[in-house]
Amino acid sequence: MTKSLKIAIAEGLPPQTLFRLRSIKRALMGQPPPEAPQSAPTPDPDAQSASSAGEVQSAPQEVRTRQTEALERLDAHKISAPYLFFDVDDVLILPAKEIARTLTLSVMYINSADVKGDIAEFGTMGGFTARTLANAMVFDPRYQPNQPLRKLRLFDSFEGLPEITAQVDLESQHVKSGTWSRGGCRVLSAAELRTMVEAIIPPSRVQIYEGWFADTVKQLPDETRFALIHFDGDLYSSTMDALAPCFERGFISKGAVLCFDDWNCNEADPEAGERKAWADLVSRFDIVASHSGDYSIQSTKFIIHSYRGMKPRS
Image (tube, rainbow, N blue to C red; front, side, top):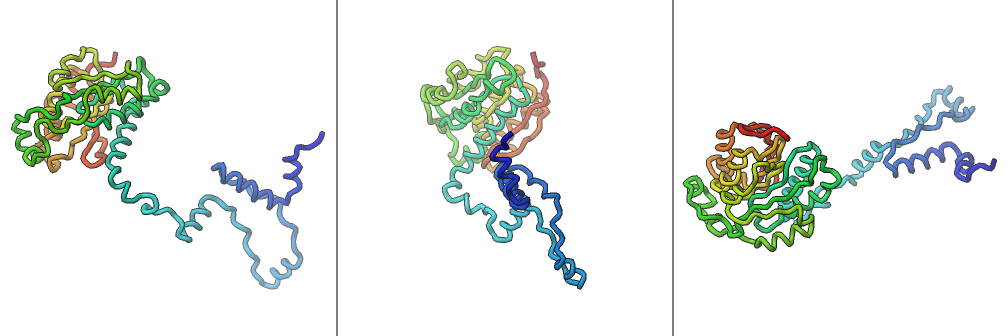
């Protein structure tokens, strides 16, 4: 039987040449290098004579690996440095990229961990995070283990921040400086937000609640469950208006992700804003949670394990 051209060429090449070609091929494919040829070279009488005369023979050539290449690049100063790919344009978008990364990974986590419930956002402002969450949800039909598919529930007054009356908020730095005030943070209308998000996931997976948190949360049925909540309500009062009923009615599932967008606002004062609200919620509902780290400029993330009133998975 006629040999294939590939075999014929391989048999016709010297072992060392064939070894080098296979090494290059495996390196390009990200595979470990092949074993070096086992056949020993034909003894050289002159080399044996030189050795017997006390001359030192050269060591066999070292097999090239990724380590070999990496060390050569390092010695030649050809290793990538941050300034080669991180420039002034990246500085301004870094906070947004960090937020997008955390929210996207959080959506992937609740699918991987099979956490029950929908995704909620309290405070939508310009729609960046709502759009980020929707983009992360497009893969749910393949990776969400439980059915039906999650919905994205978006809560906003679409009138900006409410009248600020709580003493905790009135004493906070962002309110005293005027950074936060009634009507602030108003960007999109409900219709504009809907158009933006429904271009990413089907309208059947989107629910928008227009009004103040204290009123819209009351509209939710008792069987509501949340696997992920992104909270961007800024104020202590808004945080309590949204989250206290969610814990009180057992909406938040075991393993759920809770992201606070404005955690480190107000000079990261534990007696102000979302930090103060979270401390009060933990005390009130005996919440047990893991702090999963800060992200971006002022945000942080928790995973909820248990709390008083948590409902069992049905």
